[in-house]
Structure formats: C-alpha cells, structure tokens
Image 1 (cartoon, helix red, strand yellow):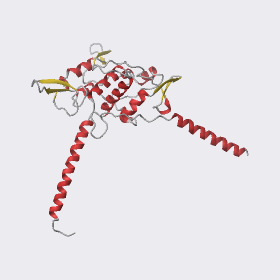
Image 2 (image 1 turned 135 degrees about the vertical axis):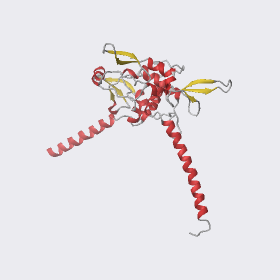
Image 3 (image 1 turned 45 degrees about the vertical axis):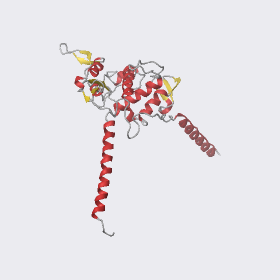
Image 4 (image 1 turned 90 degrees about the vertical axis):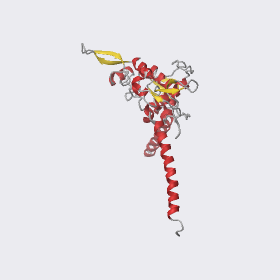
Length: 283
C-alpha cells in the first residue's frame, strides 16, 4: 500500500511539474510582414535608419554590437550609404542616403561620406593619450567598431544585477524567429515584476532580467517625422538588427534570382539539344 501511495505521489508531482513547465513556456513570436521576408524581399532602408536611432538612443546603453564598425553603415547596401542620383527634371546629380531597393545611383566611398563621419563623431571611444600614456576618450572614427557600453563583462553584470546583456550584432540569427522574435520580445512585457525580474510572454521561462526598454511611446524623436509608438520602435529596431546580422541579404537574393534564371535558360537549351540529337531515333 505504501508503495502504491509513493508511486501515486511521484506521478502527481511529475504531472504538476509538467503543467508548471508548460505554463512557463514562451509564446511563439508574433508573425509580422517585414519587407525583407520572402525570397524577393528587401530592406526598408527608412525603417533601418529609424531602427539605428532606437539602438543608439535606447539599446546601446546596455547592449554592444562588437562585430560592426561605423563604416559598415555607409558601405554599399548600408542604411547611410551615400549615392549620387541624377535628377530627371534638372539633370543634375544629387546626393541620396540609403538608396531604396530597385533604384540605382553612383556609390560614394564611405571615406567621403559626411553622414557616417558625423554619426561616428557623435560617440566617444576609449583611447590612449600618446603624450601621457593615460587612458582617455576621443570622438570615434568610421574605422572604429561600435562603442561598448561597458569596459568588461564584470562591469556589465554589476550594472545589470548580475545579468549579462547579449551582444546584438547577430542576435536575429542567433534566436529562433529572428527579427519577429526581437519585435515580440520588446512588446511582450506584461507590466508584472517578480523581484528583480520582469514577466515577458515571449522570453524562455517568461522571466527576464532586462527592464522594458520601450516602456512608453515617444522615447525617440524620429528625424523623418514618423510617430515613435512602441510598436513602431520595436519594428524599426528589429529591422535594423536584421540588417546588421545580414547586411548582404539583398545582394545574395539578387544573385539567387540570376542563378535560377540562368539554370532555367540552360535547362531549356539542354532540352532543345536533346531533341535535336535524338531526332528520329526510336527509344
């Protein structure tokens, strides 16, 4: 009898543990029609530019992007790449930043890009004073990697109650769901707090150490005048992080279309050659 009671107790405990585990499972990311989804998708450069604003003014206080240098923003396909485009009305060449997909222009080398230079100069990075040998700060150059918010991992954990903010350089590739996961996570806070953690329906275990970064509308004033609602900021920063993780996506997709077109034409030519060689032969 005691054995039966013990077995029943173990089974009940396992059942309740399973129910509790299921209750803490994260909800799947909410599907969102990003412009870059699909085999022919492309980046909405206006959204990527706005997303960079959100990262710079909100996310960069805790999260690094160690794999990106400021020059990457102005390289071909970058959100702040400068192009010379002919004005069809006046016939003159005009500067255009972040050329939309499908448009063409003469690329301006990032070294001569004043926009990227201004972006880099707005950040202070650590350096060594050549005269005194002491640590100092200087305005960033386009060749510098993105400024780190903390000197090391220990400083990062000390400032975040023991949690280590992940680097965001390739976060959309490192997390299942990609950009949709990032967007859902930023919008998944319920407003509940348990100790030093926050309830987020889209985070594993539903408890996350990061306070809601987009807690209210209007945290960022967009330079293009777009209303900065929580949903808009989450969508834009997810678009920017997707570009950061895969900056050559459009080039790769264009190459894929060309390869498929070539294979299609080649298949037709091979079929015609087959018909010509075996014409009149019974088989």
